[in-house]
Amino acid sequence: MLKGINLTLLVGPGVPVPAPKPVIDSLQGIQVNSGKDNTGFELTFAVDKKSELTNTMLPAGYFDPIITRVIIIVTLKGLPHVIMDGLVTRQDFAPSNEVGQSTLSIKGQDLSVAMGLVALTIPYPAFPDVAKIYSILGRYAFLGIVPLVIPPIIPVVKSPTQGFDSQTATTDLDYVKALASRLGYVFYVMPGPLPGQSTAYFGPDISLPVPQGALSVNMDAHTNVESLSFSLDGEAKKIRVFFILDPVTRKIPIPVPLPNVNAFKPPLGARPTPPARVDFESNSAKKSTTEAARDILGFLMNNTTAISGNGSLDVLRYGRLLKSRMLVGVRGASHAYDGMYYVDSVTHNIKAGEYKQNFTLSRDGLNSNTPAVAL
Image 1 (cartoon, rainbow, N blue to C red):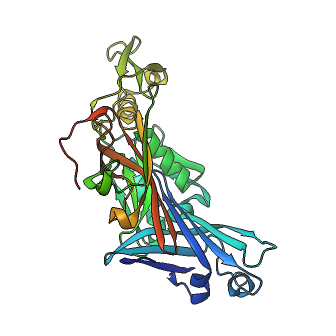
Image 2: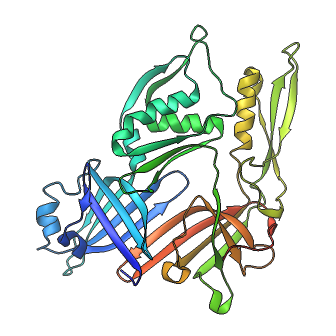
Image 3: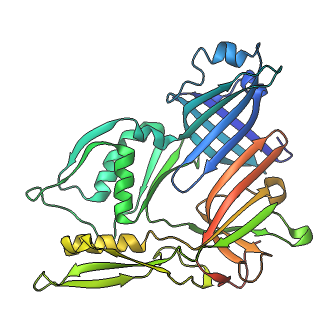
């Protein structure tokens, strides 16, 4: 690809192997989108009437959906990074009247797509939430998925004589995500860190507190991004009022207003954005004290941010790979918008002789609360 950057493409059912020469020769570009919920990819190939890829390999099932696994590894300065490990879900073929202009696109998602294929009905009597997650993820260990589960802060376990939770005609993926949403948690499958291995994370939405190299804009020779812009949504923040019945009579509702602050993601700004809206959660009064406390904590762990940023960079100039779900510093964007940000998503755009990344950032509050950022 480029000096100091190498690309490895593994394709195949079960255990993928290095892609053969006809595949590499036809490859036009790779796009990998790593977001908050999942990671997707797209491989684009240029083919013609005599292409071995479309005449032989494709009819033989080389890129068959669901059974074909794709692993993409980028080696930067001798250090390998697994940016994709997933299954093919779609093929798009666009023949053209122009010679050599026909294109074949192979799209797919991370290994979590395997969890959304079969709707199941499974009872979980006296199962705590963490046991449910381990029981579900254990069914996908053959794919190399390693679970990383953070137990709920307020566990709720029902006695089998009083009823129990069930997964009713629901896929494993939908059930796990619904459970995560109820707890204020997130669930995603992250490729790597080793080829053929992925990490299934179930827990609070926490960005790794290891700051990446700063994104520099409007700094002459020190500029390492191609574009960077920010916006502040004054209506993003809100106050939610929960109602809890008094513990004595269990008849008088007590309002509990909660601010729109994420307990696990500090604002990162010295001037947090004030809330502009108020809404009410009335169903909490019908629940037990433990269940209401769980819902309140879930709200405090799954809140929105008011400031968002978008930009693009050239990996060769940046000198490293920008990774999602981590922190990154920004400098040169004025006193109001400089400082630390959460990296929400990163899109890798790889072509022959070119490696660029688009990214989105977020935080709450203007003005940096840190004196400096990591370079």
